[in-house]
Image 1 (cartoon, rainbow, N blue to C red):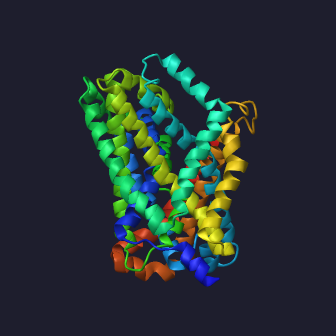
Image 2: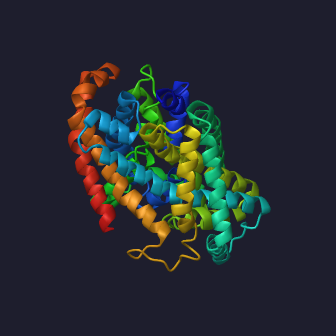
Image 3: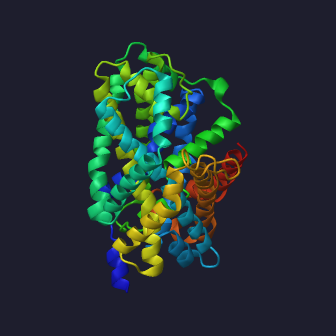
Length: 448
């Protein structure tokens, strides 16, 4: 029984493989489409500065905390918290598993949209400057029940095929390929965006702080995006940390992962905001920037179809590197708790997720459009509960667990990887600052 679990769990084959996989978790659809429009809505440069500060303080400490929980226990969230904390702590792990299960339900739908738009870009059907036509096209597509379910299933199947192959042969191998390709595509598209007439205004907007936009609400929104973009609060980094050997330094690796996540967000801003300014589009256009506004921008560019194909391929690659990290904690949970093989655990999680959540999420804009829970369709309620409730709570509990429960056990390890001074800062942020600020973010999200 032990052999099954050990073989099924696996380990990272290299430090760079782990960094790429963890960064792939962070560099998802959120970095590509969420950062540009959130930054555009909150003053550009000043939001960027606050976001950077949040990532390199609370965000990175929380990420290190989750990784250390995983590496010490060699288990996923539920088993790790039970093993290290005892008592009722394993219920926090169950909450994290529920969180990733909910995220996978609606994330696979958006991943399916990315696949569909790669095909649409190849055909050239979305290359039009008519915003109303693009909106109707998008609404018509997501409202088509067969197309929505099929593309969701295709995206989930891609994710399953990678996770089922294992940590080294599946997750690590694909991230070593996709992450460099993803960054090359982002740099290429960012350069193209900067060559557009008037694009410099967008770049200036992104890097120039407008201090009048600095508010408590904006700070909490930047903190929320920092936590979300580093994939903390849902047990993802606990699972990834559980595959680490003692030779990998968590402090150093976390700095690399956070830096890559920030680089991706900044490149996304450079890739999108200059183009938005060049064509006179509102930088605060919202989530529609991705599937409605961007195709209209590509239609006005020389070689627009080529760049549209690259852009939606980029979205797809980012979605895949994140989705495998979302599926993995639930798979690791079944492996650790019930000694299932990786193949069996992956198939069970994916099948249950598609049938219970994936189909309702995919049909939320068509057949189930009138199905409402607290004023939200199934897709939105999954997003709301996972992103606004469970992730902040999971992040807060992970920080409290490290700062108050297992700190004596990991203090020497943190000092050995950094310094006594850094260990004190780490402890203070984990034990006091992170829980207080995350509760504030949770309050903001719930009351928004």
